[in-house]
Image (tube, rainbow, N blue to C red; front, side, top):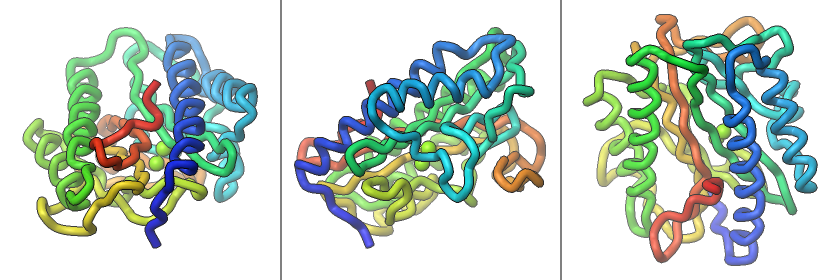
Length: 249
Ligand code: MG
Ligand code: MG
């Protein structure tokens, strides 16, 4: 069931979104060689709690940390660890959620550690641009397929692939609500979008094939071919004036 948000609920989602965006930005600023993924997770938890909010991911399905932090060929759901030290050339995906006043924000970005390969640089740029093209289609009266199609078309033209197994989603009082928001699709098809819908658009883009697998830790999702992957996500609201980015700061 798709839950349409009224203006009061949207107000709360803006607050949760801002806290989410701030926590992500703070962690991104701390990305450098020698830092552990646990340190980044601590920064995120500290900021969210300081704002009187709760990390959405902590305990979600038993997840043991405040953020998902995934390196290189890890696509999503990496578990922060004090043993995991960033090194030059890595790319780091940080995925954050914050719950405040009953509503969630959800946002992710990919950061470079020092100098990275041209392929990784291009992968990050293409992923962000594909998000922007998809989000531009999240308009009142549009179709869900328009969003996924815009993402997929751009990514594949760049020679990369979009992950099929994991998709974007509605966001609200629950971290994951209907509808699913795939990063692939057929323009003009699918659910009709309308104002008051709040969704996370989150392309996961692989440098190689789109196939992924889960590691034995029960969480970390990696590319099947071991090639790098990038992630970019914002929670957005569909309004009468177009798309509003709730987690951008
Ligand atoms: Mg997320
Ligand atoms: Mg999400």
